[in-house]
Amino acid sequence: MSFSRMLILSICCGLGISSVSADDAPTKRKIVLVAGETAKVDKVGHHDYLAGCECLKVLLSQTDGVEAVRVNDGWPTDEATFDGAAAIVFYTDGGGKQAFLSSPERIAKLQSLVDAGIGIVMIHQAVDYPDEFVNLAKSWLGGIYQTGKSGRGHWDSEHADFPDHPVTRGVTAWKINDGWLNAIQFIDEMKGVSPLVWSGKDYVESRQGIDANIVAWTYERPNGGRSFSFTGLDAHAAWELAGMRQLVVNGVLWSAGAEIPAAGAASDIEKEKLYGMLTPRTPKPKKPTKEKKPAEKKAVPASKT
Image 1 (spheres, helix red, strand yellow):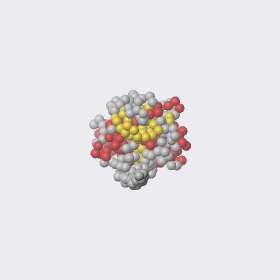
Image 2 (image 1 turned 120 degrees about the vertical axis):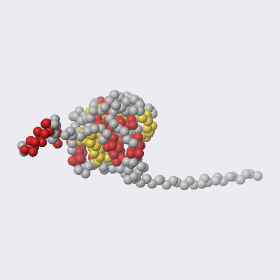
Image 3 (image 1 turned 135 degrees about the vertical axis):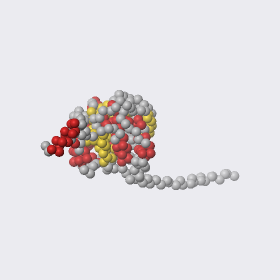
């Protein structure tokens, strides 16, 4: 050891300072937020995956020890972005449009991350899978939307009561008209699945115990790792709701293996900042309205004289 090194160590010891190497420094819990391609032509705020992931990045960064990284266009240009991740969030279109289903190599990469026990989160249409991926996707999430068997649509929904689970800590009541996916197709006997939120067209208020109305759930995968799915968040305005923000932030952190505080994780955001994230869009062209033809006058028969 050099004299200068010994001198520094002796000074540190004399001052009660321990020598800490860079390798000993605490590492941050890395969460990768994958935003699906946000259509350039659409209503502002609708399926704005970029803005949604940016919102999540701000919210998650309020928790000490968390590093949130945003990825655009459904998949990173460099897969090394996933290195060291504790959880990966996908907020994207579904029905086979998910970028991670676009090649066998990407599917294999995602499977390797699942096998490594990394948390997996799917938001809104990301839970919608074509028939050929049903079994694979169920092994990732515990349940999926399947065309012909599941339900979808927009309807009013009230949420006030939640089961006891780390993800529901601090979640307050909310009301919304959202775009929901329900009648989720779950694994056999729903082993490892914990329903958290229910919503159905038949009841305005959320009713627990109706499996067909489950719209949020966790899944503790049998080979290790946690998954969280939420089928709402059709529009960016939903992030205004404190209860919904709390649920999603808790769900992401839980999937990453973090301990959720009794009052829930920090999840505050100013309205101005929230809407400042919106992606500029070109409105969809309005459908031309058909001109109504004037009603033809019926001939009045001449009266008999």
